[in-house]
Length: 412
Image 1: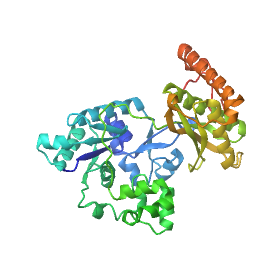
Image 2: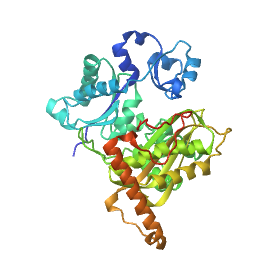
Image 3: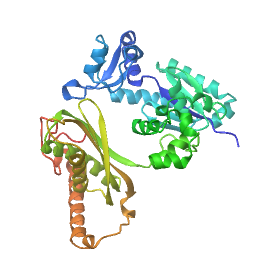
Image 4: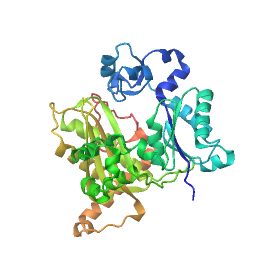
């Protein structure tokens, strides 16, 4: 059976490129799309090639970017505009195949197997045609990775930029990908890369040549996945455009107006996030077992921690307490350890009506009754919000304008 032909099309410097569509003069100066410095979200989310040459990076603060490039021009993000450009780009892809799966606002996977046969065109010709059409019809550029699987297609689009086509086959992937640093492997992550480098696994090829059990001992299940990716073992299909995807996690994050330095501020910050997470879980009739928290420091470094509840829940109260316990356990809350931003998530999800739990004697008595009472309370709050609006009632958090949490603000 012949291999599939999978494309990964990645829009180059997408947000910055979109801004240049309406302001062509920005093409000739170092520029970056950044958030609102007044509300402490002044972080670079995109930059053009000129800014990149000065060393400006995505996630740099506005201050850091200015220090690297004093003449840089900042523009605020316009997400509705970017979404419209993304839709137009995907409409071009849909001229060739129904199997267009957006991976983000600026990336899509395409299964071009049938298109190649029907149009009697090689993968190289099809990729180059896509790049030409996006460049001429929309005014931005894309890089296209072509391979027999999604992982190598993704790595191909990253291999050469901007406005390039890279083809990775079963015959050449060892020559192209294996010499790269292990940190370049999709989903490797900094922590996993450092762990492997300590064991002298420095390149993707080093990783691929390991025994799977060695990586499993080193990294757990994540090691199995990385070994498969390094060896091009990936049969994940490309889904049809518009297909409803399974929700695997629910999370919400926020950068606060000023750093959080007290337990009360941390509780308030967590509460407004957990309120949104729990509301989303209930709306989709899902419960989760694992709670995770990300803490971002003022220097933009991040620590992530998670815990298993031992049971499934969509209750705000339970998620809130576990999230706060995680922060307090792994962070010295106070002026010497300020918190710039927080993210709370719930994973290991299951449909609420399919949850089967091993109940303890406590759960069968008072504990079970309390949980059922809390579920009714939170369901009542949902019903009131559905009827009177999201801002009509809050559950369990206090207003704190100094950090940017206000009643009546609604979900963000």
